[in-house]
Image 1 (tube, rainbow, N blue to C red):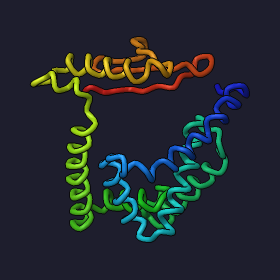
Image 2 (image 1 turned 180 degrees about the horizontal axis):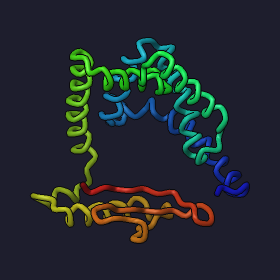
Image 3 (image 1 turned 60 degrees about the vertical axis):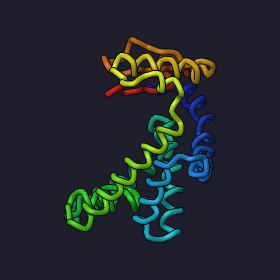
Length: 203
């Protein structure tokens, strides 16, 4: 249960969502190739600058809903989802359940599985994998160069070392309490039993 005190603390975090999306414009310039590939797909699926900008604005609000644990504009989003469900049922088009232009297009592709659609999605995945190879090489810590082969144990150790270096000063610590084998969880206390968390799945 989210009490009023926690809600007030969460509201102070919401401007960070705007900042994150404002910074998106600089991600490609910073060499984040995967973001560029994903963003290009969204732009293509939106089919117009106007639709793309509306989608970006919607995602800012949607992320605020997530950050606020479902309290930000709760009724507004419930109404949107209800209306989307009614349209999907009325026209027998399940992809209308999605709330953005690009997610509708992706859901439609997944549902209909037309050859043209599948070709486009497969092309995206191939481009994304290539971008990930470039990005991971560019931004990998030099620690990884010490290994000819990374076992799961090596990877766990490497993630721990990098996370301690990058996140310990921000107040994150490794937790063993809520985690399964093969995953690393790092927590930062927020309020009572509430935490920020980062999770790394070794698999």
